Length: 118
View 1 (spheres, one colour):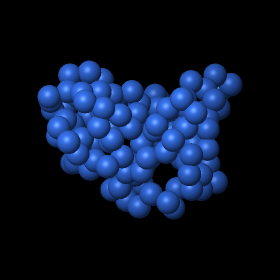
View 2 (cartoon, one colour):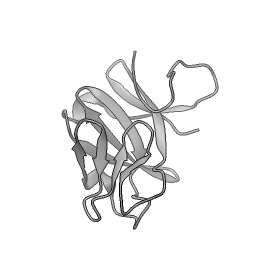
View 3 (cartoon, rainbow, N blue to C red):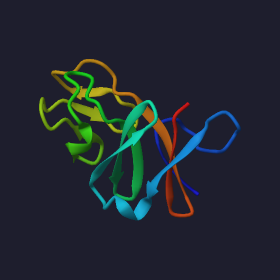
């Protein structure tokens, strides 16, 4: 099992409920894809083989971050306002956004990307 994204451990400790999102092969290196889940729209970025999941909605104006880009191997950049967020912590690295982007623990299990929504 390969881990990525926010929150140190991706071990199945019975606390987090991981949801299967997509096959890892669906997201090429350095690209982002969006997925609609019950109650949330999630974006998943492939940063050099490590997957990071975060809210697909930019906290500044609600733009779709799944249409954004990955910058310097550590940030997702909003396609509209150019705000940048750390893919692991969600912290804003460049404005105009000031609010933290929600991020989710991720793991790859048998070729499938799974995201912890709780």
